[in-house]
Amino acid sequence: MRRFPAVAGLFYPSSPAELSEIVDSFLASVPDYPTRDYVAAIVPHAGYVYSGPIAAHAYKALATIRPEHIVIAGPNHTGYGAAVSVWPSGVWETPLGDVPIDESAVEHILSRSSFAVADTDAHHYEHSVEVQLPFLQRIYGDFSFVPVTMMYQAPDAARDLAASLPAGTLFIASSDFSHYVPADVGRKKDMEAIRYILGLDVDGFYNYVVHNDVSACGIGPIMVAMEHARRLGAKAELLAFGNSGDVTGDYDNVVDYAAVVFYK
Image (cartoon, rainbow, N blue to C red; front, side, top):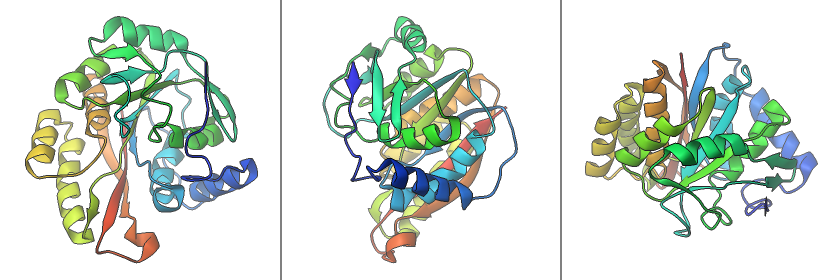
């Protein structure tokens, strides 16, 4: 089963040479990070020109390890497919080549989760998982992974998915933060949300986001990362925070991005 790129040439270059060059330039522009036992990360998924410089911080850190399993979860922006959808087999294609599905990890998750189901409909047009692959291809070369989308983004689903991950999993939560707000408003809300993330407080994070109209799109995957880290006794660190205005110069209407890592 082959999944073709949905946003190559839109969110990132469709030319393999241009794509490699832009990802490598992002990675080269951020500082080196120490080798740690990284177990999860939060990365943005906007067009590379906007969010790539922030995402590169997390991927520069993750480049220091080689995980046994990689699970990437993003929100479901399209409304197609299952509430928690796992692409079950085959390969995902990017301009940099094919990335195989980690079918043993898929089986492990599906056999243990009460929410996750095998489903491809949710993934065909969804960008949040796809845009992470070129970064991983540049830092790891050949690897396999599990793609997940979450349309149902509540603490019970997040805890369920975290509990279903196989040992040795690097979990990548794909999410942007506040959308289309003045930069000062977004930063204030998002930094408070990030305070709950750094404290691994799933319920506090969820309640804050819901009751304060924080328009982060991937709160489900973020909570999975938090719960996965909590279960492993890990801690969290904010590596970078920015917004689209840093590129466009328009700070009246921005989307916020953060790179957070979790490590033991």
